[in-house]
Length: 296
Image 1 (cartoon, rainbow, N blue to C red):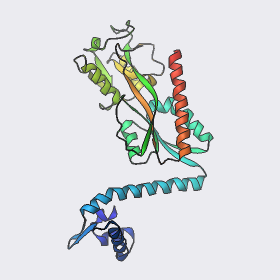
Image 2: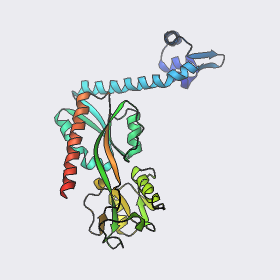
Image 3: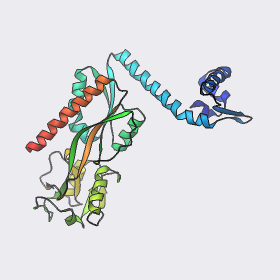
Image 4: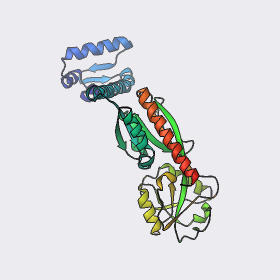
């Protein structure tokens, strides 16, 4: 807040283009409301008291929500359409989201789209820059979102092993993970990626840690590196697309590994827009699952 940055009532007043008595008056009203001093005045300026420190993050959150409310209302007034700010990661953006956006457009909802990896999307949700986002996690993981968000599960995306066509395990229907103990791996750009973490967990059950020799979030590049013999990879089915002819794709032996794909929606989002988005995404997820089950 301006006062904290300026460390004095006079400095805050100048930055806000108010007279100092006006700032002092509003501060006095606040202190009266909370029945305690929020600011400690002194010869070198003013500092927040413990009460002031406690109030500060709540005040910042209120001001941020007011700013977002002004933006949404102005957009509705100027364009005559509701705006929904949605985030997505690339594979979901390619297969899950387009039909949902089309359905929203048909209902008169304008979509503002942000693409990014999971940490960027979660930060966008927490800052309220995004009202909804497609997210993923390991089964049972918490995404560290507060109670202002609803999380709607969409589909379980199996993780499949991608091998060069001449790999020693390529002829197996299901590959035992321990057979890959000495292989190099192509992993995600971020070592904290849920898919990499579940791979490390699974390998640890067999007494080894996968050696990551290359990292990228581009699944086309992953397939290229695997085909070139750089390593093997664990890739979500949603990110596979049409695998190259010089690769083989196999499930791992044992309990299936997967990531859970969900949509996180800010509860204060206009109810009809949130319901329309969730319904459209659920329908597309069911369509994708049906295609997987039919082998197409």
